[in-house]
Image (cartoon, rainbow, N blue to C red; front, top):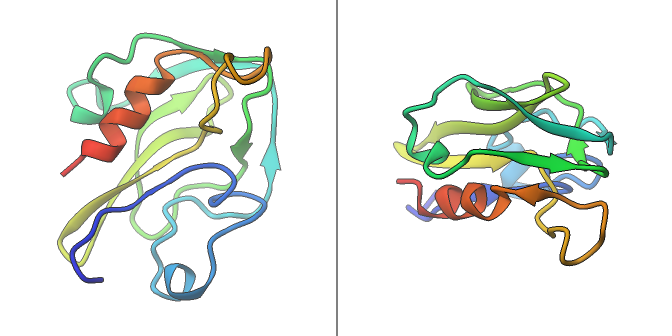
Length: 130
């Protein structure tokens, strides 16, 4: 509300959603109804020219933790997982851009079934998105 930036990832947009002002102010860009962890890869890229896609070429995970919810509050899907669920969703609140990434941040270096590929680029782009 005061001009900061926000990036949300699993589980804050899934099974353990942010509450308080985040929820009451309608900041969620993905409906935080539940979670799943299927084996997935990068799916459709709906906005390939978006700054949120710079350097993003691949993504796969054997345990692709993600929210099962659909976009809400005006969220615009930039990219999807191979199962069709949103991967990167952008939105605007109080004239400020913000992003939800529908992936669990730790990579394969943390556990063998977590993501590999362009996950670091996805997080970097989300954090730098203006």
